[in-house]
Length: 69
Image (cartoon, rainbow, N blue to C red):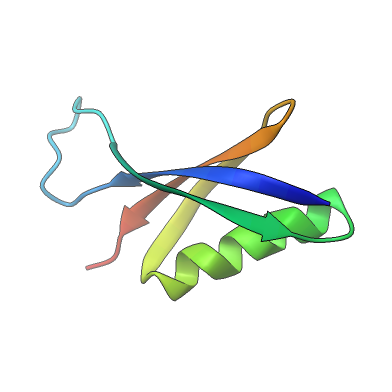
């Protein structure tokens, strides 16, 4: 299965109550939902970010990540 992922990045400059920055949308593909989660984790790590959460919607995924120090 293939799913689109909407990535939001929590920047280091963000105020404590500020919203995350919408980064981009990319696609991942895997055979299982756990595989999709692992694919998102790998893609986010490749961008130099740390994954905070992944949410599954009816048609796509939403991921939140934070910048590393």
